[in-house]
Image (cartoon, rainbow, N blue to C red; front, side, top):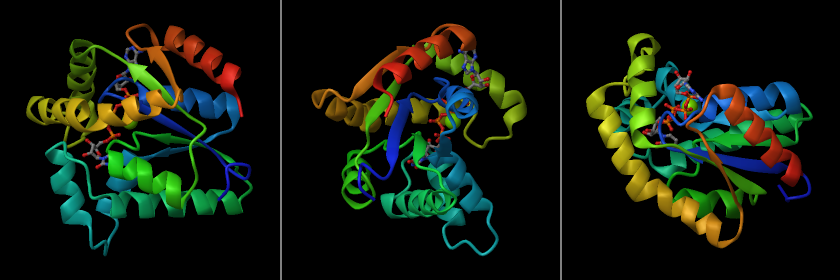
Length: 195
Ligand code: UP5
Ligand code: MG
């Protein structure tokens, strides 16, 4: 795809920062397709006959980044399907969270317009995830996995945010507020840079 054909906004931020919640709001108001890399991986893990099920399960539980080939293939397929249905604007949520993914996606699929970065203190994210863990059924919403996810976020994913920051392509939104207030800031950021 070329950048004129398709608009991709990357949505990054620590585990539990509120990426999925705010993307759902944006879908309602702006008609983006919301592609959560984590959701796509969980669906693939549960797909009968998937050759990657066991691998994905292991990486998610350990808070590690699944090898890029798997995730990028899932994203590419989802973008293609939506494109065929006339959709041209995408929120790619929770991706790229490792430098190799960022470089490959922008080279082989399409360069991003910008990155929406949700900035949130670890203490706040920890509380949200432990609360959600009571009902989410997610294998990584437990204290041990959360600690590993935080470590991967700092060591592996923040360099991606810094890489896009150097290109002046990051819009930072502070997330330590109510969902409504955060969304006000998100809307403002999107309206200023809308594609
Ligand atoms: N909540 C949200 N906003 C709130 C607010 N403003 N005030 C109070 N509460 C708020 O929110 C989390 C919880 O907080 C919810 O209960 C919500 O109601 C509440 P959510 O919107 O779900 O936050 P989000 O940032 O989406 O958190 P999520 O847990 O999805 O983040 P992760 O980035 O950890 O999860 P993801 O699904 O993206 O990835 C999971 C794993 O998949 C990764 O750890 C990794 O192992 C793997 N993965 C890859 O390997 N490669 C990839 O490219 C992507 C993922
Ligand atoms: Mg999410």
